Length: 208
Ligand SMILES: NC(=O)c1ccc[n+]([C@@H]2O[C@H](COP(=O)([O-])OP(=O)(O)OC[C@H]3O[C@@H](n4cnc5c(N)ncnc54)[C@H](OP(=O)(O)O)[C@@H]3O)[C@@H](O)[C@H]2O)c1
Image 1: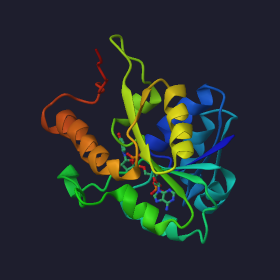
Image 2: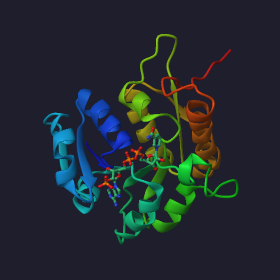
Image 3: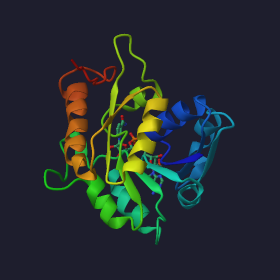
Image 4: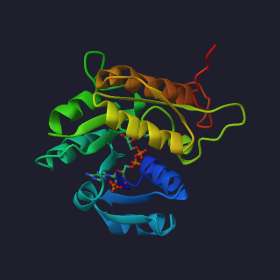
């Protein structure tokens, strides 16, 4: 299975590295591929770099690792997503990481689902730092990756990808749970940057 990743920044390259190291094939799509040629070449032969449109076409699973401002145009660039699994790793961040630009009664993921006709939208890979996606190993436990989406099969597929790269995938149910996952990302950001935690921590799930 080819995994398409739109965006080759912090999140795109982190996920691409994590997937290719485990034998998956990824296609990264960006507006100007030449800009990322060196970074993607360093990932090895399982990673290919192309345009956004070609990457959208290549994969059955398409991960959005782009600034939130780019999401609507990408959603509209395809007339019919033909049941592709469209994974929303974005957060609708206000400038300066000052908060979220929407939420509570909707979410970035739900807005995306309204725009991307025929896509099975799943929210995942938004709620922890990119370094944790590159390397999810911690000495004291397994970081969690909450996943939500209305299509159970699509959700399971993305949970399997999260598990593959070292997370405990947590089934959050319907896409409307993205209303909680986007603020949850702000919790990580708040601790990392406002509270001085830095980026080397992750949330995990304890049970008894
Ligand atoms: N950084 C994190 O730790 C983190 C963690 C969780 C979630 N997120 C979310 O994930 C998203 C990406 O964050 P990031 O830190 O990876 O951002 P980033 O480093 O700025 O990378 C964004 C990437 O998206 C590309 N891009 C822009 N428009 C595009 C389009 N139309 N098609 C394809 N690619 C496009 C950019 O290419 P150009 O350079 O050519 O513009 C760049 O490669 C954001 O929504 C962010 O909120 C980030």
